Image 1 (cartoon, helix red, strand yellow):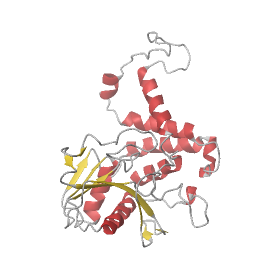
Image 2: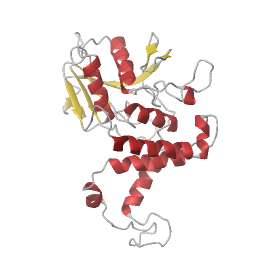
Image 3: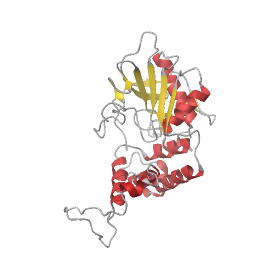
Length: 287
């Protein structure tokens, strides 16, 4: 479950209206910037992150210590060149790396948990537009995003057409298919079936719904590889045993196959840096 945040935080100075008709008072947006903003603010590039991403696109993650998730693309002399552009990446509303979400405190001093309002992609973008206003940026040089980040970029273009001169959308869509929704629902049900989820009220407990969240992440990772990619990357190859011996069937329920080991690794590592309730809310927003 994510708790660390080392980023600047912008507090939106007005209630943030939501598509549901509710509002978020005092909403905060955690963000990172790279490069220098031009005097006329004409060189700003907004990079929108995906479902389980965050604002650390080109700087080390405060929890995992891993390099930024798009370090190969953002930096001096790189495709998104920070010698030329002022690059912004913000943690979306509903997430768990410093922006207001289910783990944040409500007015009564208790975590929102499942009292947090259901949000949409457009609500996330409303928060990003408020951040741009706070940074004094009327129009972006470009907005860039992949997957859920691409959904945000499309929403910005559709709903705030003057705020970005260019829109780059990668491996994304305007809306989810029935299959996308189905896989997300499997993940949500896995989280809610974990006894430690406790109707979303687990923040003060030592037990967290890590098992359910790990299964949700495993199910999602199946969708990140194509039907051709799974046999190419894993096939039916067996995983080497912990003692280094050649892979063999255990005739039990260990991760005998490499694809099983891959999914378990992805699931267990994910629980260190993400909040289960945020996963519920963000997947619902994508649907």
